[in-house]
Image 1 (tube, rainbow, N blue to C red):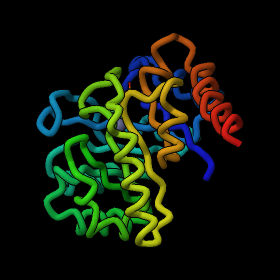
Image 2 (image 1 turned 30 degrees about the horizontal axis):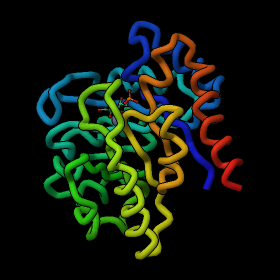
Image 3 (image 1 turned 180 degrees about the vertical axis):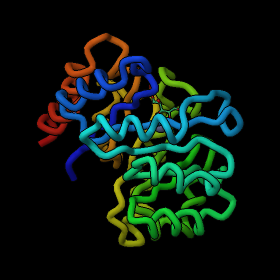
Length: 225
Ligand code: DX5
Ligand code: ZN
């Protein structure tokens, strides 16, 4: 399965979002990952539908919108209307997860469920077959620039096993602390969508950093061949 790079604009310049999105697109980004935080589900507040709509006007890649909010069912339609093409909700926040996933899919976009680091893979057991993608958090959500939790690799393998067991080809996205040192390990463990914020935007050259992240994955794949 080819690997998709999804730069998280959480670490981009919020006054220069158009410039930074264009840079990662030149660098080969496949998706634009947009982190929505409400100050309740996570201890940080970011952006809402109007900003997603503005991003949608300048981005040429699909928007992968990650909702870290309570009561996501109240807001999913607003984010779909704003231009999300992938929309993920946390299993810890969605009380009627099946209903919310079914609604997102009924609107013609891809629906994903996200697991916090402390949430067991078993939480996906009854919903996995309905998902278009799964997101494994490899940090506790709320902030960019945190350190990858090593146990996430084993979790990726167990999510991959669960999906294989039910015959699902849904891709697995890994989110948090991804950089050139662990990206290839995450792919080997089952991830095929890599979210990266700090690793892409912190060094001031997001175009080159996007290329470098893909190169790190490709060179490891070559050395294993
Ligand atoms: C964390 C967010 C992540 C984060 C990733 O709450 O969901 O998408 O921005 O950023 P890095 O790669 O810096 O961990
Ligand atoms: Zn995210």
